[in-house]
Length: 335
Ligand SMILES: [Zn+2]
Image (cartoon, rainbow, N blue to C red):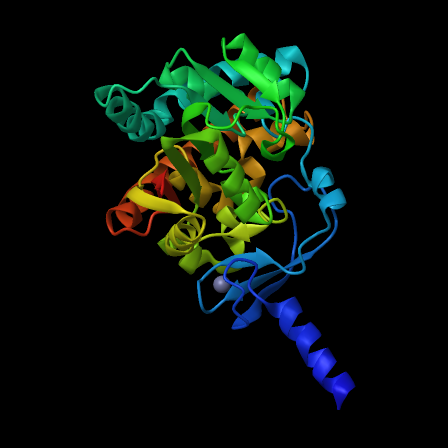
């Protein structure tokens, strides 16, 4: 009887939601592959929590496996491959990136303006900064980009962004030294999230601001596409939040949510496009290695652009109804 009770306890613990600890969880999809970057032949099960709506890899891969799921050039796909092959694509992607970063810049720009209006000194940390294109577009002079990828930080440096190869937990930055911490499409890659949010809170001044963005499993496209939804990005996304579960997590970790946005021209149409034609996603094609050059590459890029444009009206519509494929949240530490 005791053994049975112990087994039941173990099973309950195994099945608990990694976010809210509810045991109202179930395996939603089994044997999902890495559709986008094809880093592994492994298959992964995705669980879901009936209590908070979160989805998650089940079981969570051990930490030492995670690096293998990130191909070289994951953050800066345009740097990978031969210089000649990449140069034209890099130019096109740069134009595209600048255009579609407008939503991030507008959302964060409002936060920065609020800080200036309140007489605060603006100092920005972007966690998981990648190639620094967001910080460059934001245009704040006192900013730091943090990432683990050296090629990404080199690319950020080429944009004039001061980069730091570090993680949040390693004490590389002074507590309370930033007025604003941003992290776009970062939180879904880490587990557990609570220490990460505690570190962010620690780096913020008490009157500072936090801006996070994650894919939203409560979006229409996630609901329609299920296991084929690109926002799951198995196995790199360990936890897939809904807008509601992200807000609950922030409140549990001592933040007060100030503003929420669902519209994002950079991420929402491409998430839908990646669901429908994962083989055409340009960074993944470059990372997978020079299978297409010249005319073939151009046609593939044009094909991807056409699909993305075709996905845009739907992405706009779901955002209008508060069901966008990503959610951006502005929060402040609760005093
Ligand atoms: Zn839950």
